[in-house]
Length: 355
Image (cartoon, rainbow, N blue to C red):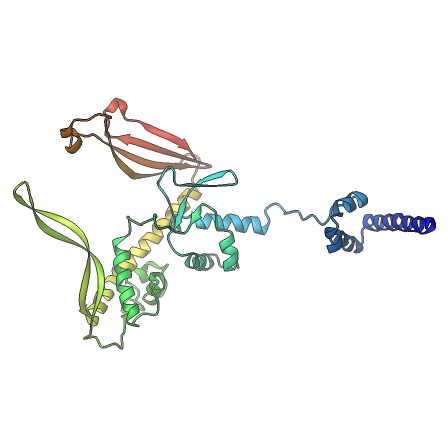
């Protein structure tokens, strides 16, 4: 029994010494020894640490090179998600999300993640990234819209065109409901100004053809501005209202409306895309002596007292305060600010916050 134990210990120490010498010598067996240390049995009996200490080498630890592809790709995808034409930032001061101690203002995606992935592939032809990987790289503060994220600043051009496209798609006159795909059907190149402004000889006269009976009536919605007479203080006054109205007309009329609105919509779409591109390039290429300021109206607030008489509570005596939020960009720095207007001049203030 003693001889067997002696031989076992001698075998172990000899094997360890031989393996250590082989590992220190720079040959192809070095990688094989590293794989043995990370084997299933070593993990099963939890002796990888002992083996590492014994042989004095790391168990296949991988180091990420500085500026590696995965890091650069993650930064590129994150910047794409944060673009103003991909997601919109929420205005609420408490509308933030926190993960691993990092607090960020929540952003809401303007389109589905499938469409955003397709746009990324089209704009970045030098990168091949699968849809699951693109989803995993989504920043935690960029989220799909919830029920509470109701859009109250929608574009009239986009909404009316979407109503027309939905109706035509339901009649099998259009292959898709996506506005971006429909615009491509009526323009040679959506990035060329002549095509989008109707000056291209090849695509300016493209019209929608339909095999459906054009005399059949159909329905679609449209946002319209109309005037209405109301009785205010015993006097008739004309007020302007914006209403969502249902239109009932023939398919021929629907196609004519779509064709006339498509040319305006192409110009509108090109202008928006062009403005976003110029805005993004200006932010990325600011000089040392340049500043980019973005200011927007935030919200109106009423001043209230803890005790008010009835005529003040129900009347128009309460003073209003208007908040204007903004952000200015300089090279390497971003500064947010908020100004309050409506108070007497000595009390009006502007607050700054570093972001």
